[in-house]
Image (cartoon, rainbow, N blue to C red; front, side, top):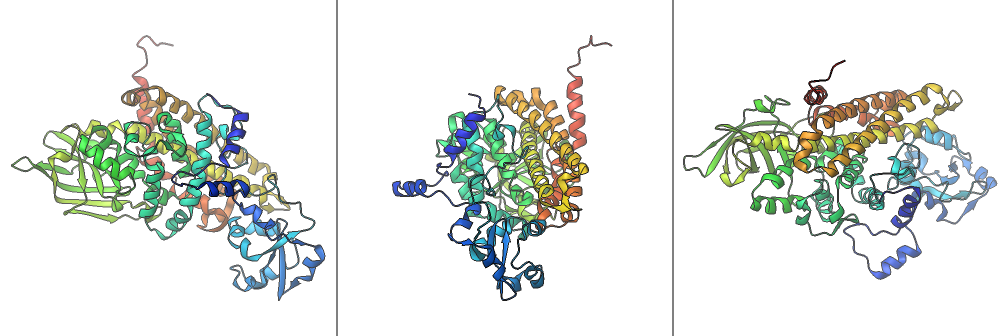
Length: 562
């Protein structure tokens, strides 16, 4: 059933009482949850129950007793001033005053979230009482800013989505915020790989299985639903929501470390591997117990897959392949237990499942995003691989590799659109709160023009993405490659071009903050630095554009004349 504004609002209300996946609650806990809803960051200000008068505020305007007002809330910064990164005197200068405009010109709201519980005194008597309408939304919630969520989540009707899809985005975003965001932010900066605990949580919640898409593999996990979405109804729209929400974490290196390699490395195993491999490896990887990556690209062969040089030669007794060669730029390769590897056999290319073992060495490659992605250079030196580890048929590996390219490109499109939309939100917020030349940036026509460019481009590619996803729900997997390959290639080409253009406009809106990897513009800086990954991985823009038109030429009728 298609959904509209009424059902969206109903879904939001229902979501408030939903139980996150993987968590069992007692009846008493459920009652407590109903009696006292989860506290939002904006509601913290009411917890002290203190109302501060204007006179009280003015009395605390001294260096040893400094109170300030931010967005109607009063904070005691007397002791904190000495630790203020921006300098003690700068903070004391605003003692006894409302410094909301100055604060939000220099800091993200997350600073308030961090220090509010310790520094808050109460709420200024002249400030409007906190309510659902004037509180600042948390990162666990959907944005209320126009164009900063897909249309169906902002009240528009959808011909494609059901109420279950609507609820899914809410549930997944909340779950990721509670279980992943903190480690993702830290990992993006320190380069540490996603922890085993995170992978186990994703496995238990069904997130890993859901990111592979609908299919028989969902029977390998012990769940009837994925974040409340019934397994039997799980479709490509639901999968796309999972990819988009992971992408909205805005930690590109860490996000890739969360299993991008799995999303492209496990499907050949599930589609073409022998039954024992599907059962053993499928359960281990989807359960978050083991990690897998796709090892195709080499120093010698990128888009030209047929040019790869890694060899696999059978032993005289025919029981093993001996693998020698190198692979490069392998996402998650440094942290993988399994490698779905394309090799050159006697009469063509074949695909092998290679387990980390003697002769397999991985080293990290420094790239434009965080080392937490585990991007690796892999060497195979006389690696002994049982012939039972052959995926599909010998010398048919090229077709096995091509089989999943369409889905991989679609996944990249989902991620890059979500990332671009997140940047649109950053720009709207900044332009609305940043004051320059005596007025907010958004009152400058040139800024509105840039926002118009960004919004119109993101919305157009999202609509194309939705239409293409609908076709995927109607076509068998094996037909998607033939019937959708050209269109998918063109959409990926256009989506990555839009991402580049969005990044360019965002940089100009944020100015110097957009080239600083912390503070107000940190997400814009990350997006600017990493959006080109999508323009290369899964097929470069030039290859995508050419393939799209080449596929189109095959459909031109011989009788077509001007």
